[in-house]
Length: 248
Ligand SMILES: [Zn+2]
Image (cartoon, rainbow, N blue to C red; front, side, top):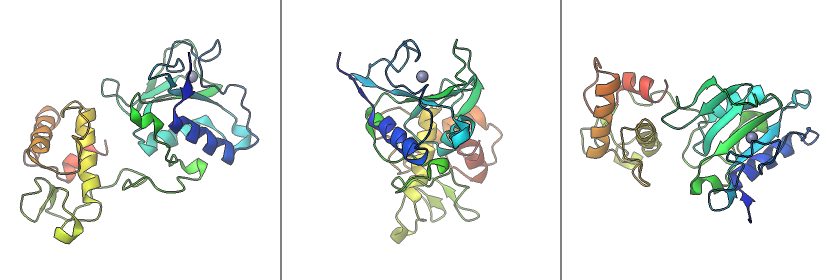
């Protein structure tokens, strides 16, 4: 069967190799074999694409998978499906403690290499540079995506809410119409998190950066489930909601 490696992983490999040209590659691998979890994403499956890569732990030259995995976690890169290293797994899917490290109980503890799986969607071929500090960061930042999850970006007494709401309600308006810089990006962060948590339909295009009634309904559903004593108003994202939703 013809197969190829997801482009996002080739970009990652190239960035690692460029930064650590003398690194050991003994435990590197993309395609499944006896050494590389042959029943996992290393098996070509998404249209013949291998969506997993292993990169060898080599702290002596600076490629420390402990640090690397922490920086992958901090990147919140939406191409990541899960990462395994040192008997821990961080899965980004809503049913698995997304973005949290939990004990990995598979037979291979992954102490000699880090395993990274990317998502089985068109995103796996997104070739933009990975914004990982130990790799030098991204040479060009991903479009409208700050490197780390931001603090609540609105002034006091403002909130994220309907784009048709009052001036205090920020719903993705451009700066020329009273929005803050990157306002659509912030709304999309909220929408993507609601999708991840299962409070919004997981359909392409739903997270469009515009806060309308469906987003308000999804926020309210999340608040009822997670913040029943919220001091915020239903369907509006205030600083305390932001702290729980975006920066848990
Ligand atoms: Zn692997």
